[in-house]
Image 1 (cartoon, rainbow, N blue to C red):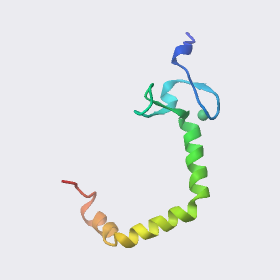
Image 2: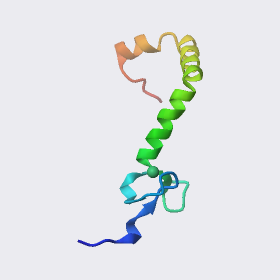
Image 3: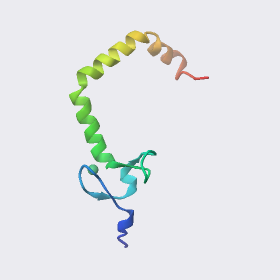
Length: 83
Ligand SMILES: [Zn+2]
C-alpha cells in the first residue's frame, strides 16, 4: 500500500489531509477543487441554514407568491423545459 502525499489536499477548515474525491469541484480554482472538504462544506451549509432560517423561509414564501402556479404545474407537467 502506497501513501502518496501528492494526492492529498488539506482542508482549510478541518486542516485534515484528504484525497481529492473528498473535495467538491470548483472550476474557478487552480487545482479545480474547493479548499474546504465536503464534510466541512456540509457542516457549514447546515450552520448557515440554521442561522439564516428566517431569511430563507421568507425568501421561499416570497418566491411562492411570485410563482403561484409553479407547484401545480410541476405536479401536472413535471420539470419546466427551457427553450
Ligand atoms: Zn474539512
